[in-house]
Image 1 (cartoon, rainbow, N blue to C red):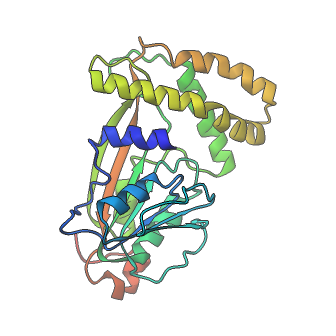
Image 2: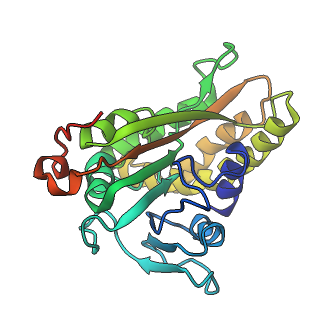
Image 3: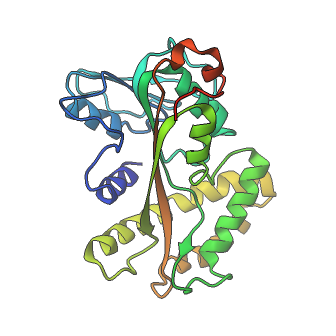
Length: 279
């Protein structure tokens, strides 16, 4: 998770968010959903020392020494949130692949309810499907085949691993306005000629290799009925495929952010995801 954080930070040119906040006009209260090791929340606390940053996760794996304006709580965000309505100026998610059964309902709709009018939701998500622009990725590419198998098992597990391009429409359907989308490419290995992207690709390759076994064992054994031995054997070619620089594959990082319209807190239909009257 720490390495994913640093990779995305490079991809986003050091920016923690794209929502329109600055040190002069900072978010006074921030919620980081599925905070993981808490690096984003900690750096937000450093960036905005007068803001209050709250990070939540199922696992208490955050460091004990953090900025005084940062707090972490163990919380299951698929359940009702223990916060008042209209509480936060910014709510954030990052790389929550496989966490949700219905991200639109469990996260986006709840975020709308708990944001202050004029507050922002920003989701930074990387769906699992690889892409290629120059035709070098064949249908039998082992990483692609593994991804399709992951998608199949995730549907059986009722967990979304393909969230990205839908976020913009989902936010609008929930009631957000001024919805923006930025898409960044993350190479699967060091195939790019560009030095910066080559470095990012090599880091991402290592991260994928580190997480491959965990994702595979969890999904494939429980939902596809495969033994650990069968899974391990199948992963040999999958790992090997990530070292093939002749295949110019990449993942997409979707950064999607939208604003809760002014006056929405007093409109019951807005909380239910209806028309807010503002575009």
